[in-house]
Image 1 (tube, rainbow, N blue to C red):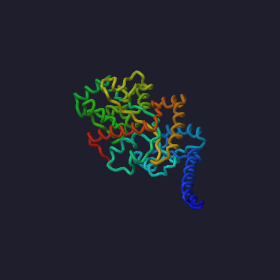
Image 2: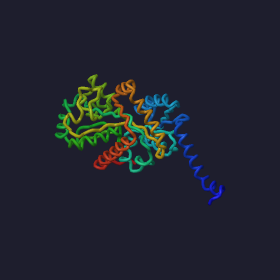
Image 3: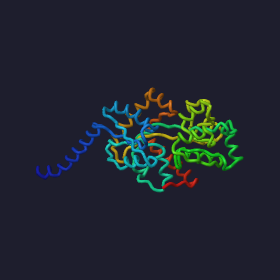
Image 4: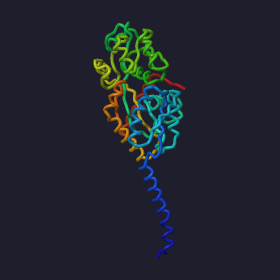
Length: 328
């Protein structure tokens, strides 16, 4: 029979382990106990920054702590994204993810300092937004089918401006060319704004522009909007068909924003953040504000977003491989 001291000696480590687990659970239940950093890997004032500030203002109000936006732009979103990959997995550093850094960069860059699949814990996809196929007024086409027919008659002569080599819009163009069976000349610009304005000015033939800017130019009569690249029509251009409706079945190319944490972030923290963000995204006022920029809210569950992210990475990897695009 064990004496009291021997029994205590054997039980003590287990008691310590139980206390540690209870302490950890208590700490997670209290999350967040201090301000949370949200790194946006792009400059202040851009689309990602606006989405982050709108969403996390509401999240902070719900959870009782400020969620501080930190803009850390550069290198196509790589710098800020890598900073989150290497942060402590405690829920106090989050990433405002986007299709470029999280789904396209892994395909177009030969080397990245982070692993898009392994270094992050997905929390939710926030938004989805399409591109607008906009052409200059001088181009003799009035529909997407006419544009495709013209490109087939004049292969490799039409020019199409993009937001930059290896950007989301560039990859959407490459996917479009392959599915339509055409060849155009992608012209990289330093951003979507200059790319659209040179279509307005007639310098290039067409672009895949963001819905907010392209719809304004189309309404002003400065460009012709032929189609939107998303799965459904844009409320900003309700009369403009999707690429699928315009005659290219199966085509869909949308950009998105999301929230991710460093891999290893505790599951209770992930669930707390997901619940708070989902509630914010369900607010009709927020949905209406984002709709002004042609952005739809999503609010997917972590597991669903993980599957969607895997599919996106695979989709763009195939396009990059076929097009032979590689950046250093």
